Image (tube, rainbow, N blue to C red; front, side, top):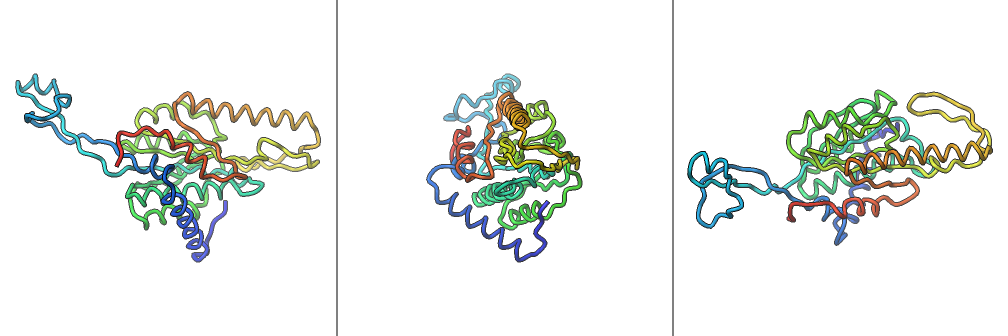
Length: 296
């Protein structure tokens, strides 16, 4: 997994991503900064006696019946939101014919973190392989955003496996307030539909699938040795074998179909981003129809 140990290189990367985010997010009239980071909700505050002029729809009839005096529920607006980014740093993300999946995941993640804190929202991080390797509680502020990006860049995975279930379970047990959870991975992993469905009942969830064109379209380049980045297993294959390439492509497409089916079943919006393409437009599409309780 790439890591930038040179502080100068780290600062250069963070600054470049921040500049891109400023231009793309704050310069757009519609898109990520409006539909994702400009929402708000309402939070229960207290129950008090009814005052003439209160909205009768706010009356709490159980409390009213108990005390014989009309009582209403009072709510306060949530002026900020909480975002948790779940980043899959398993071995498969080192693959990439043009831009590695890891690098693209980092750019997407960093840009969304900066966009969140720019609108005074809180951002947190969960790094996962086949287990939760790092958890950073959500906070606001640019210094915290830089810290979150630094943690991903300099994280050395303890495992090469890939399994989203531990991270989803971790969120369910640790987060008490509703949050927006953004999953960033290639999602080549065991079935996580049960845990995803449970998470979706309590939190907003979005998925960004980062893939490489050569994963589904294996080129004819003769004999090559492939190594599974997650297991270390090596195998010699003949890419000139048309039947093999066809079977390989079919297997990849079936895996992608299963992944898409998981998100559809759990009502979680998912957008695919390829390393050969720009990532900003797919993100706009992903968050374009996000339901909100109101607008700031």
